Image (cartoon, rainbow, N blue to C red; front, side, top):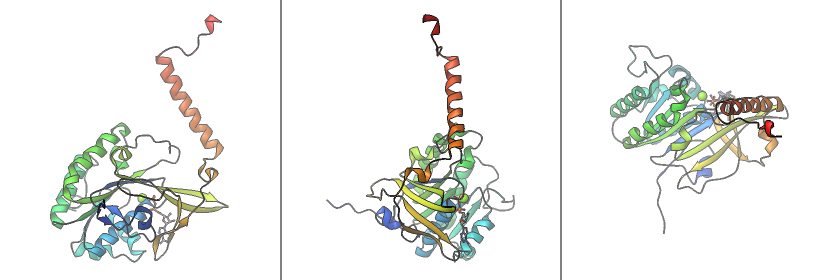
Amino acid sequence: MRVHIERLSTGVEGFDELIAGGIPRGFFVAVVGEPGTGKTVFCIHFIAEGIRVGDKNIYVTTEESRESIIKQAAMFGFDFEKAIEEGKLIIIDALMGGRDDPWSLQSLDVETLVNKIIEAKKYLGYGRARLVIDSMSAFWLDKPAMARKYSYYVKKVLYRWDFTALLVAQYAVTTSLGFGFGIEHVADGIIRFRKVVVGGKLKRYVIVEKMRQTPHSLQVHEITIDDGRGMRVVGATAYRREDTRLPASVAARMLEAELKKLLEVAETGEPLETSDNS
Ligand SMILES: Nc1ncnc2c1ncn2[C@@H]1O[C@H](COP(=O)(O)OP(=O)(O)O)[C@@H](O)[C@H]1O
Ligand SMILES: [Mg+2]
């Protein structure tokens, strides 16, 4: 039996091939990685492609201003300013937006966010839409335990509005272990970006960790970001463990923290040692 799935191109050269042609319509996909790995650039391509094919586009930015996103897009040849003027794109600025700016967020709470996105979608009108929230992490900075609940809420409410969404989650450099990342639990897909210094040079990689209803690539692929052109998949790479292993000193510090946490738990529970018996 043949199952037809409508897929949206990501607009990144060489990436759609890794996911059988694109992201299935209506999916909420987590885009995760450490700072500087290319998450925002990836999202910009996704929105630029949406503008190109006539989708409605909403970009929520919490870590950079609207102007910064427009500038970054322009560097790759995408005219976001024009798209905004033509009513094809709304950039919701949660960082710099002033009170007189209708498309800004005055507070970083999830309910305000969701309401603003729905308002923007109504403004743009009916039809297939693309949504980027860059990043979700900003909404639970001071309460990481809420990450999963918030992610669930965002998906549950926005699901009905014909969005195909990229939800960005920032991975802290020292805690790639997964602390307070809730998006992955509700996401239909996970696209993971990485960066590594190899032979004194920064290299970037991407791997599709999950994409429901998709025979996706299981390989790590190297990517590049070039001026005037943007992101591009260079090719599959032989992925060695040492390529992503943390420096020994960092790993040691993380282990130490983990151990400390365990001991704290142990202190409040059963005693660890029973040396009296020996
Ligand atoms: N015009 C450009 N030419 C080449 N590389 C660029 C250009 N603009 C941005 N980059 C690269 O993109 C990186 C930022 O990627 P970004 O997607 O913002 O990371 P993050 O994962 O933190 O969102 C920069 O560090 C730089 O290497
Ligand atoms: Mg970013």
